[in-house]
Length: 114
Image (cartoon, rainbow, N blue to C red; front, side, top):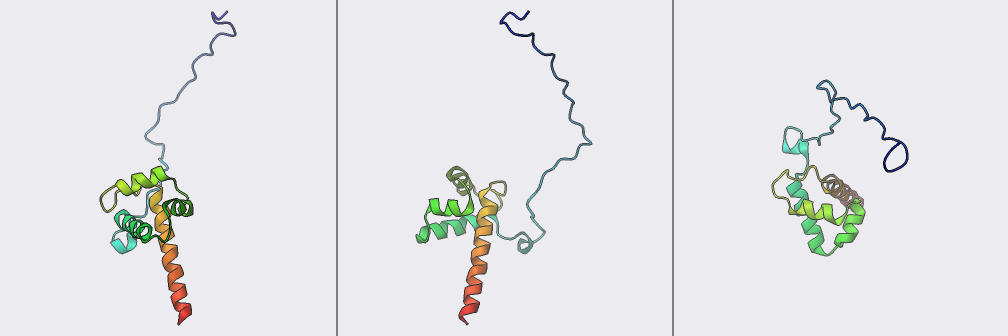
């Protein structure tokens, strides 16, 4: 009988060691070979976010709601320095997509105005 009551502890489960043959399922961002193939860098996206928020066109909470992110991730992304520091942060692909869609929308409106 177990000293604390109940049934005795179960024997430990067998844990298999990781093997070198097991593939890793890691999806890397498409960093291409040239800047054009890579698209906008993290630094460029941070600059666009800064310009947008500085313009007063949209508030930080409204922007974060639009891109589906939270303030902590946003703060970490914006605090980073360097062209490609931040590819791992959820804000980068979300904001990049936001600005790409915005650019396409502006181009459509400009074309319609002609």
